[in-house]
Length: 220
Image (tube, rainbow, N blue to C red):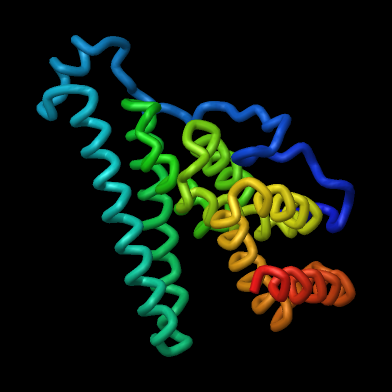
């Protein structure tokens, strides 16, 4: 995936108290979603739409837990076993994403399903989709710290450093707890990039390191 240009003037981004939130499309509903409550009730032994949503959500949670266990196994496995385990992990994450999308299709107000979907997308490296999903949950409820973490991680996964710094300054004034979450995500991002900058220029990583050091000192 192509990386976004770093340290440009901030985009009109999306979050909590920030203005001009981006427009997001609703996540796709199940492919064969019933057209009415009655047909759903007839076709499903789950009883009703709410139960169907919770069932799909629980399936997504189980898939995420499976993916997490597989990630731990990959870290401990010999090199020749990792590819197979990673393939299984990817399938678990894809299954989680499908289940959370199904849950949202049944109940678009089930915000925990957005959190799960964003998490699955992020772990799959689908940062733009994760960013949209977490931002949509935050548009509905700005106090969701779990979605702030996912939103921050997704934004930094796209190397949107200018946006991250501007968001931090704004959150510091209105939601200091969430600003701290964002700063922690920045520090995690920095530790990774100092080991492997990827497509980033070393000077961009250093500029971010300097910015974090300045604001971490102010926060302390």
